[in-house]
Amino acid sequence: MLSRRLSQQLVRCWSRSMASTADGGQKAQRIRGAAAKRPEFDFDYLLEPANLEKIRDEIKGRKGVGDIDALHATWAQIQSIMEGERKVEEREYETLWDTLYSEAARIPNRTHDAVPRGGEDQARVVDVINPKAKREEGKLRTAEQIVQPWRSLLHPTEAAGQRSYSFIGPLARLERAVLEYAWTRVTTLGFTPVHVSDLVPRDIGEACGMMHDGMQYTLDSDSSTALSGTAEMGIAAMLQGTTFPSEQLPLRFVALSRCFRPEISKSASEAKLYRVHEFTKVEMFTVCMPSQSEPELAFLVDVQKDTMRTLGLHARVVEMPSEELGASAHRKYDIEAWMPGRALFGEVSSASNCTDFQSRRLGIRYTDPSTPGVRHFAHTCNGTAIAVPRALIALLETFQDEERKGNLKELPESIRHRIDRLDASGKPIRDEKIKFQTGPSFF
Figure (cartoon, rainbow, N blue to C red):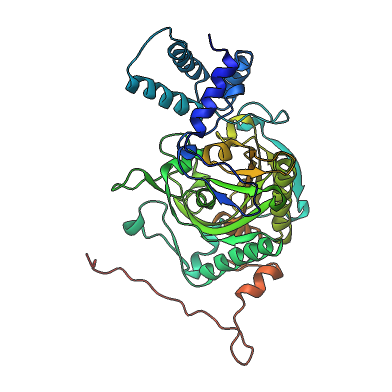
């Protein structure tokens, strides 16, 4: 009779078949083959009977993603075959292994002990930014009402459907200024800029934690390819199967990309520009050692807080409860900016510590001189540096001139100098208003 421990070792051997081993060199290595198809899950933890009740509670706290009992039942069948208790065809045996890995992939990350348990109403405010900047006076307008006289916001629904939008003139320049500001801040802090594809394999999204159906747009011509919901996916795909020497960690990346989300508005306040199907975001992503991931998460949140502070926005930092973590996050913080025209706090950025959830599924590892010949799983963290149009909503509604329709009070210098346009004599260049008239369709 094989012991349970030996059986688990066989599981790990299966997952490592055809994969190369690290040679301890100083350059990052890319490992191809079965390791990417058979992730090296922590089966010692997942298949330990003493952990069963704890994992059930974890799954329940994550809105029921995953089925640990199905995983154990599949493993029991595999064990009975391995121990000679019953015989099956080779194809059935392979199918059981496929099922084992499929069930293991759906088990959510472990939840940090400090995370509040429950739904959104259990979220905990841990910090407040620019408390004196909160505006509640008078009859304040929404961002969409503020820019109406600018003739700068279009909704080309015939081209892109509901909740589509286009910026022209002043609003397009404001968007670019905000994105450039966040990009400059983050790259100045030493993040390596990268450009990643907006098309990613669907299984990359699942490896990053998008487990539910309908969380990704897929191509009609190729259902295995999806539109990226965040640059986090593209960066993760770029790093798949890579091993880094420990002295290079933490590695910090930043990307600017379009993001595509098939989301549905929950209320009237989330209509218009608040919840859209595609938007632009500057995303931060970190690869680090396990001992570094909690400090890295705190660092990402500090970057986000300083961005809100320097933009002059009133905001709060919220520790998200277990049901809001998704499948991948061990711990997550949201930054919610006050949007006075809407009279609500709206999420403008988030930061997550995913520990080894993504790295196990994608084969992202590191080597350490203290353990030669061993490749350890890295930890990954991610955070939004800035996302528009929500950041624009907060800026427009915060700096609106409530007495003069369509006017703004003076924006922060970091944004203002990026949108000021002067001619050769130093005089400001004014936009000519463009009149759009309806006419016959070209199609």
